[in-house]
Image (tube, rainbow, N blue to C red; front, side, top):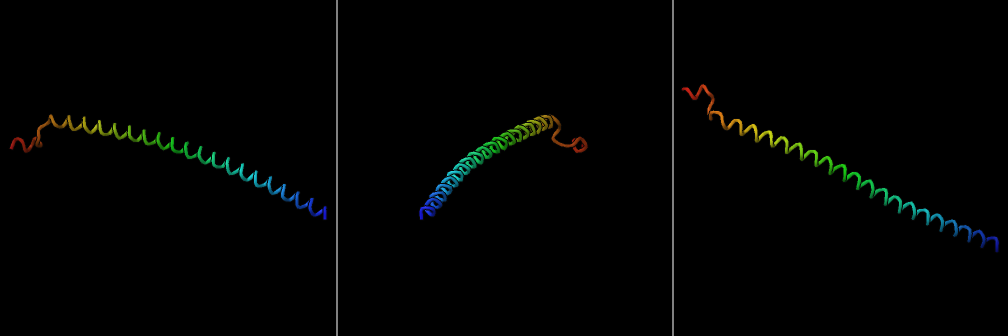
Length: 82
């Protein structure tokens, strides 16, 4: 009977150790996932900033092109002389 108790206590001890290891793994995985999410967020934010800068450059070029065309005649030259 005492042999059976020793085995039961050993099994309970091992189960407790396994449970603690699972908790540690779960905690570490939570940290890793949070870090990956944060890193991905930062990458996406950088890409968004770059795209916004590109869009601003395109808008500036369009405004400059519009300003240059405003100084021209409002109609094509052929129609202007008709």
